[in-house]
Each structure stands twice: as C-alpha cells, then as structure tokens.
Length: 224
Ligand code: FE
Image 1 (tube, rainbow, N blue to C red):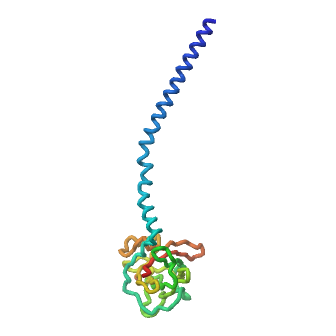
Image 2 (cartoon, helix red, strand yellow):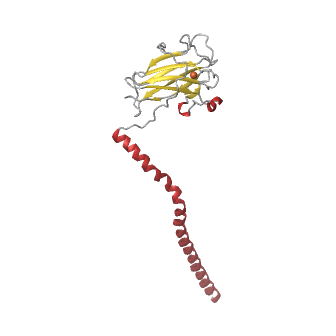
Image 3 (cartoon, rainbow, N blue to C red):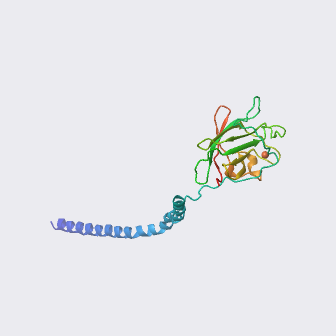
C-alpha cells in the first residue's frame, strides 16, 4: 500500500509539476505572441498607412467631381498628317496586305464619362511601312456614338526607319482641344528603340484565332 500511496503521491506531484510547466508554457507563449505581432506589425500596417491618402483623393473626387483619369498622352503628329480624310471607320481596301485588326474603345472625359460625337482622325503606314501621301489610303475620320464608342478596322502598320509599329490619331471632344497622339502594339521589339513610344499608348491586342486581331484602347481627352 505504501508503495502504492507513495506512487500516487508521486504521480500527483508529477502531475502538478506538469501542469505548472504547461502553465508556464502558456504564459511564455502568450507573452511571445505580442512580441511576434509587434515584429510583424510594421509590415502588416504599412499598406493601411498609405491608403488614407488614396481614399482622401477618392473622396475628394467623389465630392467635388474633380478629375481622376490621366489625359491620353500627346505625342508628335509626325510629317505625314493630311487634312481632309474621308469619313469612314474601315480603312481596309480590297487586296490590301497586312494583318487585319479591329480596334474598339471609348472616348472619355477625365471623370470617365463617355464623350459622344468626339472626332477621331486616324492615319497610318501600310504593312510595308509606307504612307499614302498623294491619296487617302489608310486615312479616315469618324465620330463616337452616343455612348462614346468608336470602331476602327484597319491593318497592322509596318515599321519604317526609326519607327516601331504605330497608328497616328487626332481626337477631339466637341468644342474642345484637339489631342494628337499615336497608338502602339504590344510585343514589338522595336518599341523600346522608338523615342516616341510610350507604354501608356499600347493597344490591348487579342488574337481572334482566324488570322485577325482585335485591339482595345480608351482615350481620355479634355472636354473644355
Ligand atoms: Fe508615323
């Protein structure tokens, strides 16, 4: 019995000791958690610290209607613009070389509101990199519809000395400033060697899988 009693007491003591260790681990553990959090907090808190400024801007835009979208970058007109282009949204002619692309998008003001009846005047080189400077091949103007949409069917222009693939355009909201710019194509190695190229003017191009491409680009223009 003694042995048994002693054994029980020893077991109880060991159990208490064990609980004590467990409690100690819990205490140490809970003490360690804030330490760990404190170490990680600066990283976790960093994004919220930058957001108040952003939300302040957003709030300002909502309450005042101030500008939010950056204007489409203006770049040089180049030497080949001609006034008097025909009104058309299809520049493709029978037998024309090159990959056909249909570009769609909207003309927007800086608040993102579509601009109806905005002028778009496109001109470009053919697939060989040559402009028609005597006639109006691959030149045409059009106006956005009631929801600010335009569509241009054309061919991918070729490169010519010093220039990557690009389509020239002039865009103008009714009774506002004329914006002169150019559109570029993604994945063209010459882009980075072209001093006029800017990534903000890249078309979003998708392959239709039937030998033609689709492109998308929204213009943001001044309306006053
Ligand atoms: Fe050009």
